[in-house]
Image (cartoon, rainbow, N blue to C red):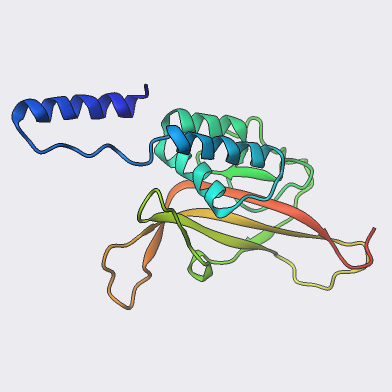
Length: 197
């Protein structure tokens, strides 16, 4: 049993003794189906299978929630402190956190490619059915230098998945969501230009 469940049970017991209304169970616990979602997302990430928005959410949400799920993601994926550059000779799915411990991350001597990402504001948000008000913004990757692809050139495609929270009742002139947390999931892949080897 994890610390959040123990805390919740203690709170319920205390409130029942005081005659208070029952407390709903916390959502977002990495138990039952959520644990399976996290396991499948980690397996997909390790095997460089393209993540669905639900899988990317499971990874980022686990890190945001902390506990055993966060430890599993942090140890299961590589980590880097910035989303650019990408390192094609290293892992294709990584956790991006400013506070990341990067002892096992890419080395400065590794070949890198500078990239940019579309703003979360221009992304089609995927909203979690199990965590109302939370979702991910899949932000497409673009190369920093714009130019023509030549035969055989490698182009990189990918997504930076940022955890977002819906704002409650925003005025019409503001953004209806905000990026939350320090955990982003980065995944990229190669696409050869037409006529490439």
